[in-house]
Image (cartoon, rainbow, N blue to C red):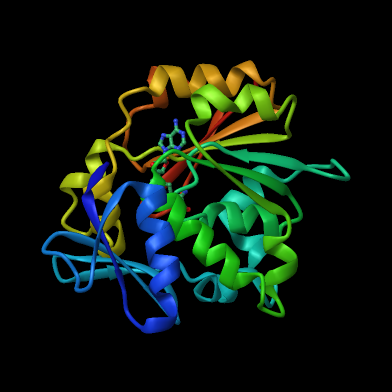
Length: 243
Ligand SMILES: C[S@@+](CC[C@H](N)C(=O)[O-])C[C@H]1O[C@@H](n2cnc3c(N)ncnc32)[C@H](O)[C@@H]1O
């Protein structure tokens, strides 16, 4: 039973979807939003609300980053560049799937793992809506979501991908005054990454050509492992391990 969450339908059309979602999550079902975190189901899809904040996955907001030649300027896309004809990436910490979308837009087939059932529900809903979008549908077609722990599941699904991408929540983000509003809601669900070693070992065990890790600009290396090289942006850093 996921007691963190209440599920609520915003209109009569959404009642069955809300019932199903509450059952899947083992969450409370209510007619009005709960006091804490609530998943609302309506014509616009599934949103997570609470504490005066609201979060709904919406890949149309990523369009400006993947169109008009801007995709090639994305740091992650530059780092993931490959000569493979059919490149495969694993996003072992999918979250809302925004970084995975960049990789998929760059031509990667992307296998996304998300362990949190609520975040996975938001991501699945965003992907479902994007399937009907004229530009996004092709990109979303290269993304496959697997709900579960990538540490346990990765080796079952993939061998020798071009890239394994890791972006676990880092504790520093919790304290940041500059923290993005939507991350504040996600952090109410997420545990900080207490399994850095396990995540890195799982990534290494599938023999990727490279592992790309997102870190805070001045954050420690994941699991203390020194990368082959790093690329720094304004607020974040990508570390690359070439096994
Ligand atoms: C910081 S968010 C990732 C954000 C993501 N890069 C994006 O662009 O939206 C980290 C996510 O990884 C998930 N996560 C952490 N460890 C995981 C694991 N072992 N398996 C699957 N998901 C994991 C968390 O539940 C969380 O949703």
